[in-house]
Length: 374
Ligand code: CO8
Image 1 (cartoon, protein in one colour):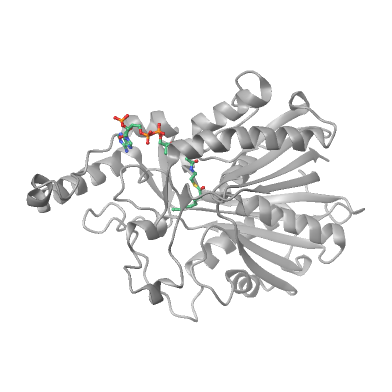
Image 2 (tube, helix red, strand yellow):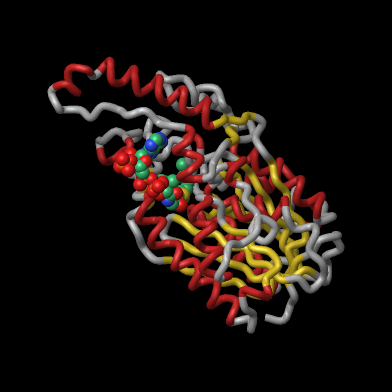
């Protein structure tokens, strides 16, 4: 592949509604008390487990998360609902996820000095799409007035990097010249806000990336993608069983196993070494070592995971400048975390500096890019 391919701009759209740990825990604990009162007899008889209180201190210590953003906050803290109340839109209105995507796409296009006429393909890549078809990407294509083609792809936490991989390959192969990769992560409808183990983990966000040939790029901050590397390895430790076959199962399509659930400890133990090896091998294939990397834009699921991976890579603690953390403000935004970090912390690097963008999570899946500032 001869064409040099660059990331020429990114866009970050932050939803307007913040939810602090304290607010979340107050609602969860009130919900737990209500549940325990309503199920007192069954709890007493040992048939139902009582719900235990959550704690803001635990959340911050175990995850590093202090805050998350919600596309719609209404309903999430309502102890009788614990789910965002997102009004249904008509088929001729822009869908919620397309709206989120358009916000980030416009910001990315502005950063890359591109108009709709410059874009010839769009990939929407995320954890869930709110419907199967028409693709959210095609709806966004229409909203932006882009010609060419668009499609959706789902790769859970690695959706953003895997999407950029596909864009990189298309530009390198000459099948598209300038792509938008958009990650509208609307996680809040799939988060189990009534589950103590996971109610604090997720936030909503939308990010977008312009990937194009170096020859056409002219923005202030361009990063050449030197190589991409992907890995998947099947695991049941992070699962969401919601799907179109539910209707045929005659079972509750909204039961807890249909929502996000995980064995967090196992994920932690299994994924961290996989990620460190993956990145090390990826750097080696470019004749680089960890010491050559100026910035690590890592997936943002858990502060302790990032610290451990940083230590494995560097043999010491990574500084916040080297490996910026955004999960304290944004929580785990599924695939978007590494791109949020990139969006907020990439302008200060100088030409020739190397960086690594890496995501990891459900699947398991790991996706990385080694980049160099132009
Ligand atoms: N408040 C107070 N105490 C709690 C709470 C709480 N909310 N939750 C658990 N505890 C208690 C437990 O009861 C336990 O108590 P004890 O020691 O007495 O048994 C103690 O705290 C420790 O519990 P854990 O072992 O569960 O806690 P950990 O220290 O392991 O931390 C984490 C839990 C934060 C979940 C951690 O394991 C972790 O982050 N692991 C990595 C997980 C990860 O990265 N997963 C990726 C998920 S995202 C993804 O891949 C794709 C999904 C995409 C989108 C989904 C959208 C909804």
